[in-house]
Image: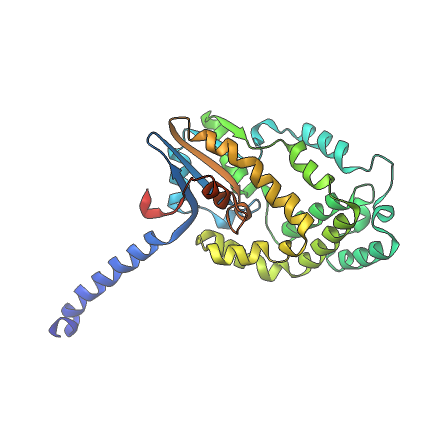
Amino acid sequence: MAILTGRLGLRPVCALLGIFLTLTVWARPLPLWEIADDDSRVLLMGSVHLLRASDYPLRDGLNQAYELADTLTMEIDMSKVSAASSQDAIANISIDPQGRKLRDLVGSDAYEQANGMAEKLGIPLMMFDQFEPWFAALSVTQLRMVQLGFDPAWGVEAVFTRKAVAEQKPMAGLETLVEQLGFMDRLDPQTQKVFLLQSLEDAATVEDEVETVVQAWANGDVEQLENSLLEGLTDAPLLYQALLVERNKNWVAPIQQLLERPGTHLVVVGAMHLVGDNSVLAMLQQSGIESRQLADADF
């Protein structure tokens, strides 16, 4: 036990401890998975759509995944979405074609309940009176995140899009903005009402939960991500199907097609699409395509 005695004797132990800690950090899983064949590699990265400047730099493995990628695919090809086209798409799909207002669509009782919850958050619900409930729900959630210091401009997709445009890296989308919004626009009135009320309820407590989600994402903690991101959503089957399951199904084929193209391809989607029984990864596995979760040390 002489190695543990005296200042000089402690140095080997400290050195070994430092090596162990370094290896532990590099072995920590990333929110990143790989599927591959002989000449193709597809990296699937779970993202957070709104982050803070303080959440950067990203972990080395995530940056390396972007740098190694020959192409970048996201839920939507954000390089093709301008402010004007986005506003037009939202206006065309988020306003009731019969001219009914938010109160008309959810009913007076639900509207008053929603308005009371929104007031406590400092978000005037009247801002969304001309919109359908699903769009009001999304807007409330984003405004609440902005209140807490999160910014879509610092989301993973936004940051990677700016880099890819500057570097002329080829980009593609798994769906268009209109297709994405359409999944929610087709929700029945009752489900839309539940979506709005649930979003307001969640917004009131999100401050306590968002740090847990961001840390779980940064640490590649699949179990915590599944618990945090899917909690409550599975209790609303129609919403769960529209927001998650149907879209995941649609994405499997184009992701499989990337395996037919030589090179390394990065796919970035919301982290909730990569966890749980109906995740993109689970659906790929059902098609016979196995994935493995990566760590920084894999790069």
